Image (tube, rainbow, N blue to C red; front, side, top):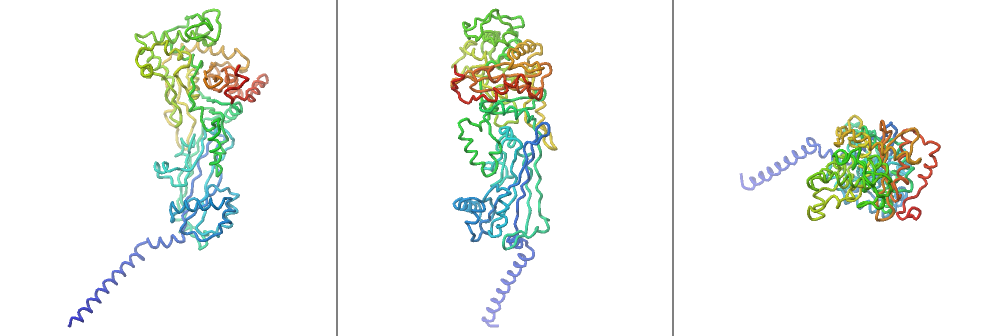
Length: 605
């Protein structure tokens, strides 16, 4: 065989081997490997995410508070888009051409091959018009969403709102993808994992016009969505509605607690807003408006505002003094009214005051002497003040009192270390920090903490962690809610404090509740930026407390002016279910009062 023939055989063999390799590879790709089949299938297959309905929220008696309504997102897959009538699509969506072009550019930047949301939260009415024309727009399709709906335009801060996820949300939890929604505040945020459910997916066959022709593999690869769990809140919606009526045109907060359980019956920050404003396509515009409002309706005063407790803290200073033996029920202290030193008194007492008198009359000299005796009982100021500060800590101040509220302000409880740092040494004495005796100075509390203090009084020395959710569907609430927190004050010392607080409530008709004996304490909080704030803390009934609450009304001058009457009306509404005829004029006065001006000339004098 000559060389030419050999070379011919070699070339033929090479071609045969290459051909065989190609044949084997084609057989693998087309028969054994399903990837190409899947690529082909993808040209006629659409996967649509099935978003679960969020869980519903009920009040404590089973009345529906939050539910869902259907909405639609318009999706776009950029690589599938062909030339289309932009004007028609803009008219159907009620958007401008620049908005449409910006949305398409954003989708391309995210991915040319993956679907993304172009227009969010289209109402069923608008979507019906769009759906008839959708076949004209290749590369566009829809997916179903649910939006939150509210049976009452109240409890915005409690319930919270839902918004689109950001990059940090996606990074923290791989469940979320761009365009998903997540609880941003309130119950929606705290119980997001329970409320959100689990996403599903449906696979559809589509034709050349992007119209669905049927399920892929008869739904064999579909995954149904799992709806979120329902929540039963502790809120009494009737009490919440009434509180919001009373707080129209006012700034402040109300927190009402069932003392035996720690369940929050009502929680209001005023001014507030309709939670429905932060739902749907108008959410961004409304949020910006609320954020720029000078009255700060988005700021949750019930959890985040830090006020000095003022005179509402005086019963607790007395309890500490009694427990420590710094005073007793026979103690009487002379008060010289405005001439008293080092702290003046707002009353002129004819005779020396007792514990009961001091609570009823809010006697500053009695509280100062009690505070001083408590601290000076110990060898050094530091030791005595540390003891006092630890009692305050056990009352739940200077720390978060509930694990349920992510945005709760811990308040301020001064310590020995704090004053050593402020005064650059340990030379300070009880006289230096005397404002603490009357609930002023470096102590800051939230309305939630003050309502919890009222619950401590109602329970004669203990509290349960305040919480807003009573039950999660097929689950239980945190076991920590049933842990009893003791304050270390013995039962016997509450009797004289009770009597003093009871006498406070019968001093004026606008504080008394027909047929109910209850205990309360007013407070006036100094404010260097305008008219003083008013506060009132109470629990009722005295013999078997079912409600404990704190009311703060900013710029109301005195606690007795508005906070106390509002608190009494809330107690009456909750326990009697109605307001007595002879108190309707007080109700009218409270509802009509406008107190948003920190320099209101009617109250300034």
